Image (cartoon, rainbow, N blue to C red):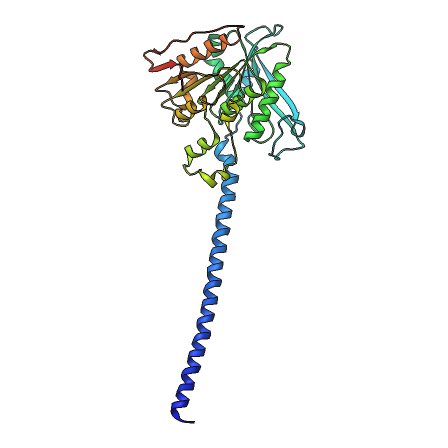
Length: 349
């Protein structure tokens, strides 16, 4: 065999070997890419799962104020409330299965302004996500809110599941369900006139209050710093929940949907300076009610200080009083201003 042929054969062998190596390299690269994609998907899945589970800690801050509880226990006009129910038999039992087949105990307080022997009007109050019934009632009592602004009413507030001494876990489903149970308990008490129950909600409690007002067809509903949808709350914290990202939202809190079946004209209270609940969410919610709401829009009040405001409490007291009177029609002023930089008017869309 000539040297030229030998050289050509060697070149062919080198090319064949090179081709084999290239094929192996490509296979290895594909395998590496697949591994990278798999790891990336796994990491994303873990992060999404962690975020889904972490939403409970982001949304809810349950606690119990032992000192306030003990103080209220020694105060004659307050009595503890205990409500027992089984989640599997609840009228609105939903997709949340955290505590199915368990008995839930809701605990809270009632403040008696009227003799217990009489059937009297009642306010049911649903508080914010960082409150509890003992701390709220004790604070209201020290501020003399009950006697000053709501002397016609007894006043009840009960902790959400997982809050205060209530058992269970908080979620939109369990809170809505608890709201129904609280209303059903209240309306059959001998000291309650069931036709004169006013529902009040604050912050996250406005979603529960709206649900209960829809469920009960209550004659009055006061919403302090309300939101339209849970989507707004999520985007208020992390402005990313649009399109398919909405599927990551664990809690719905769709107040706008509840508003469509509420029969009374609610009072909506919002602040332009609320750093937690954008008052535009409150105004947007108002568009969904069957009956045009009343509005109190204030300024220079941040999220935690609505119930420290005399104009807010005065308007709430006026509204509640009017809505327990039969055939009462009130004519509201077109606009009111004072030194506290607040205004009231009926907003028409």
